[in-house]
Each structure stands twice: as structure tokens, then as C-alpha cells.
Length: 90
Image 1 (cartoon, rainbow, N blue to C red):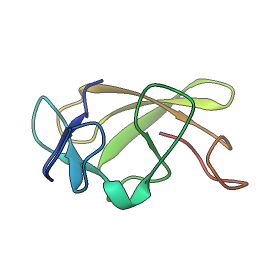
Image 2 (cartoon, rainbow, N blue to C red):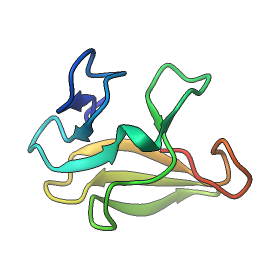
Image 3 (spheres, one colour):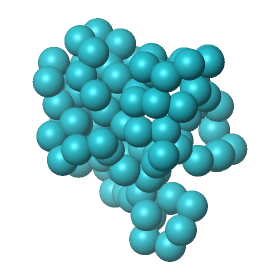
């Protein structure tokens, strides 16, 4: 997973802080938006800023997500699959 570097302490997959692009260091997600999910990857409900990522429709219910600065592939945004009704999961 390209964004699993965190500027906080502890494991880059579970530490508090800001999660950044592994390729360019662009800030992507805050640990405040992180939540437990059944997938093995970190799950977030929102990006840090509107320009943190770029998105394009890949298939119904899923958007392809890339770093908003360098275009590095980050995975997907799954629409309506977050911890609360109507939230997305990154």
C-alpha cells in the first residue's frame, strides 16, 4: 500500500499522525479519520484535504484513488462502505 507511511510514532500502519504518499510525501489522510475494518489495509473515512487525492470512476461503487501530487496509485474509494451510513471507505 503506497500511503502507509505516517509522520506520527509507532507502526506506519497504525500510528497516530498524518499518513503520506510513500513516493512523494504528500499528506493524504489523518489518523483521526482511520477506523477498524475487516480488510488488512488501513481504512479511512475521508482525505486530509480536498486535493490530497485524485479520483476517477473505475466501476460502480468504486473510484480509483491516486496521490493528488504525484499520481502514485493508492487503491480505491468504496462508496457507501464506511463505518456510518453514507460514508466512503478509502
